[in-house]
Amino acid sequence: MESSTIAIQDLHSSGENAIQQAAQLLLDEFQVLAPDAWQTWDDALKEVQASLQPDRISRVAIAHGRVVGWSGGIHQYSHAWELHPLVVKASHQRQGLGRRLVADLEAQVSDRGGLTLYVGSDDETGLTSLAQQDLYPNPLEHLATLQNLHSHPYTFYPHCRIQG
Ligand SMILES: CC(C)(COP(=O)(O)OP(=O)(O)OC[C@H]1O[C@@H](n2cnc3c(N)ncnc32)[C@H](O)[C@@H]1OP(=O)(O)O)[C@@H](O)C(=O)NCCC(=O)NCCS
Image 1 (tube, rainbow, N blue to C red):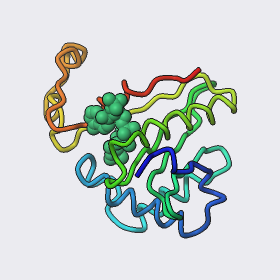
Image 2 (image 1 turned 120 degrees about the horizontal axis):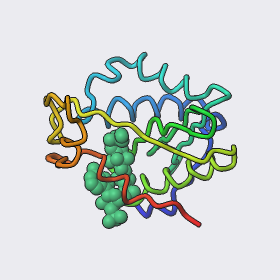
Image 3 (image 1 turned 90 degrees about the horizontal axis):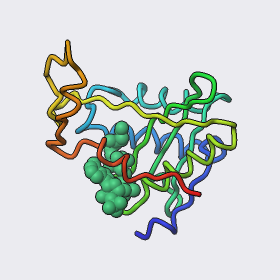
Image 4 (image 1 turned 90 degrees about the vertical axis):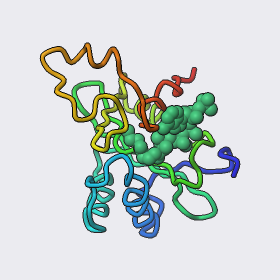
């Protein structure tokens, strides 16, 4: 499906079904990257509900009435926001939707006076050369030789460029 036909909107005005569909996305799409992050339906639902707090940003991508992507922002420090989470349904990946969700979140953060959007990502399943390594005492040496072995999402982020 063409990514531009998909609307991105606030989750809090998208209804209970959208909340449940966002929770299902977490359970389905983090199996490879972080299989233990949300082990039960309740864990996933709590994560989505937490994103609806007034100091958070929670945005969903809707295609034909169903949630196919979800992005969130958590206010940290004075002018910085953490991107958490970011997920696109497998059937809609590699079509530009992840990049659109990040650009949309950047605009939302900017509207709130934010200057920085940052992201952290784990490697619990051996997707990169950093997995199961003792990174100390020289963690930056390991970082300098970082390799993406099995499509870890960190190489997605350089494809996102601030618009305008
Ligand atoms: C990471 C994720 C959000 C990317 O969403 P997406 O819709 O597939 O991304 P896009 O189609 O917008 O990709 C934009 C660019 O990044 C590239 N890209 C996407 N995922 C990539 C990956 N895992 N590794 C390398 N490049 C990637 C695309 O090829 C595209 O390249 P282009 O600019 O040459 O066209 C999606 O794969 C996902 O939800 N994964 C599971 C959950 C996850 O890992 N979330 C991130 C946690 S940090």
